[in-house]
Image 1 (cartoon, rainbow, N blue to C red):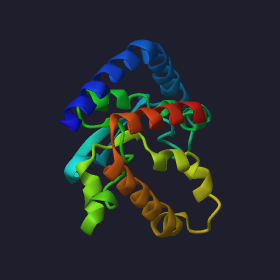
Image 2 (cartoon, rainbow, N blue to C red; image 1 turned 90 degrees about the horizontal axis):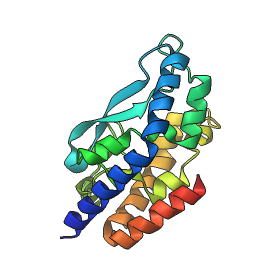
Image 3 (cartoon, rainbow, N blue to C red; image 1 turned 120 degrees about the vertical axis):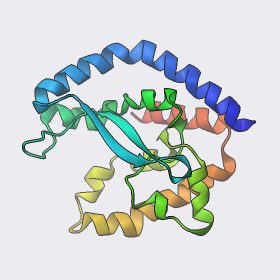
Length: 185
């Protein structure tokens, strides 16, 4: 029954958010189109609920020709505005407002044992882990081998936090995490 109420909560909040923020979304996609000299929309495969792949939507932040983050893209990533199109993923039922951030194949889909319970959750726009690692890109850039540091330290910590959320999830916890995310921004 909890998931039914969470879905209703997600739908209402996603529709309200899109009504209020759609103008920002459109303007940012247009600026990203000009800034990246390519389509301002980015789609990538991520792992969703039950390990099922889905296409996540984002505002494009990298130039195709240089494979570097554009100047406007840096702003979008820092402000997390590049994540706004994921409101559509929520409407489609692929994501929730709160849950583990969806990762590329090769991480959550390879979890074992009790950690696989995380796959029962819909991926979310925010979580305790995404709040803690809001500056993950900057943190990883401090290491000679960022992938190794991610795999050995950050990802296991995210798994631990997401498993804790699995056991304590509720609408109240979700509201607290949403408020915490908004005031952290």
